Length: 583
Image (cartoon, rainbow, N blue to C red):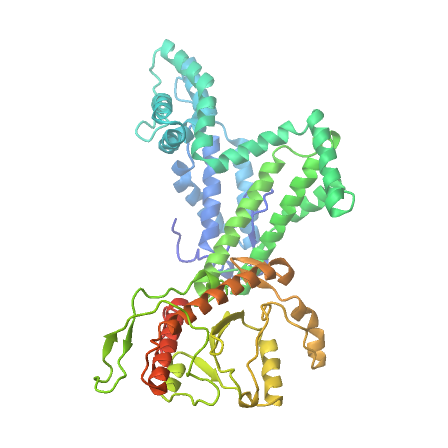
């Protein structure tokens, strides 16, 4: 739907005319006396308003559809929009004119209308929407019936739907035959009326259940509301819900006050951002929708807990309206989340990657020739033993210098080498802010731990700078599994003291589930333990493939260095496929 340039975009639609729906309304701050309020109105809101007007116009004319009334609705809305003085005036005039139209509308009858004509128009008015709906979803219904119950059932349903198409042709409800057949014989009209009244509702129920689960849920919900308003089941349901509420919430449930408060919250309009809205305004509107959705669930609970007398005061269709609020809110929140994800670049590495992406040993390996007389950089196949090695024999052991050829290789892979005084040499690789991998040489072990928060890491670095240098440490440090998952409070300043509660309750996000350490921390710990064990096996396998027949320590050190380089290359390819060596 297109409008003149003055009808620009607005972030949400106003309250539907003639109703008390909880649809969002644009902020009143957009209105002013100089007419600029039209520029701030989003076209999406006007489009939604046009569709609602078309639905109202279609409901006034027997057999008409909302699609056929779109052009008239556009003209209707555009006239009101251009004649309004402000956004509030636009909404008021639209609501007022629609109410007046519905009140004064008189259905037109064809010239020289007879009893036959009146019967046809009555059938179009009462059953037109249902017949159109059945035809629209007929193909999907047949497909679902065939999948669930076999081809025979699918053919039977298709035959019944063909009858519905014949009804639509006779009553002028199809696109190819928009005008009814007023000249049909009396006996044919009687059969048509009997078939429609006797079979249409049952046929529509099958189509809804098969092809439109959302509508099926709404209609089932509406039926459940009527079934639970009276009778013995109403009292039993009320008593059971109150008992369970007391059991779990530890307080008495007052359904009347809960319903009143919840309905008041769900009826509040959401102040939507304008076309110049910031991301924060959109997120604020999404939070308001979430609050309305929470209140809708509270209202549903309160309704089920009411007794028969209290439910009698609740308007019919309340549960259906609550479902509409939840659906509307869900659609808006999903749109905001999608827009946020488009603006926000997803991290290259996440914590679940530590165990979801497993290191895989290559099926065959080659190693660089290092013996005298070989060409530099030549590759030669070697026979692998298929065993494992528990520690390096020469490489990075106590008293041995770091091979100069490995230093630039460590830098290219983003690995930091730590050489304590004893046999504690290890490499540290960081994977964004997700996790850290530490590779120990003696014994050959891989430790994968979650990254610390920036505050905890800053404090750890300060402690390291105050203590002895890494080269003076007697052995390597071994960090516990909960490292980075749960943090001890760090109190160094008054501000840190105020932040202590935040540190103690660090939230984790794993598999799109957010929770504290007590909730999902232990699960993450076990996954990190498994990932560390698997990576250790792969590392030991690389070193286990180093030939034991090396001519001297120099050649053995070269071979072990190559095994370490291959492992680092595998790690980077597995966890960061787009990794580019640091030059």
